[in-house]
Length: 202
Image (cartoon, rainbow, N blue to C red; front, side, top):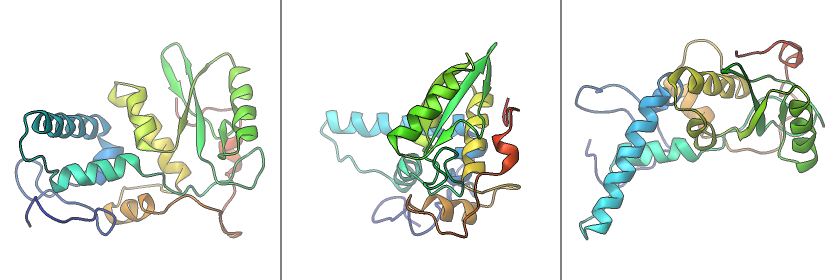
């Protein structure tokens, strides 16, 4: 498979063909090794910009295209906003106390501004509110430099997407390719245990 030429990352998960990472997929990196995902995407972006500035033939290879696609996707979540109980969750608040990053199901909201404001107000009331992030790698990955903190947030993203257990490349790619929209009536609501007082990831 050529690394250049036409490639649609939405059709199938990209798998690296050669080198020390042969057989691996950036679809899995994004959640299992987010620091590697960020590093390689940044390197590809830098190389692409340098080629443009130098007047060279600037073409993105398949890995670059796949990384960008994953980074900008806004996947459908399988949980409902705890404030309106209608729209799918699109945002969540990040809490931090004594350097420990936390994300809780009760501090999530749909895209409606009123719900988002209620979520942020509730999160600020804890005295631990740090920021609001969208359920999107482009929003989550730059938030923290450390691998452990990034993995806490990407793990929370997986829970919101309804993915638990061992990561499956094809299942994850399919979930990432599902765009936000109105949820079907048979989609689950936010699990009660996620709405409790305890921190889901801390």
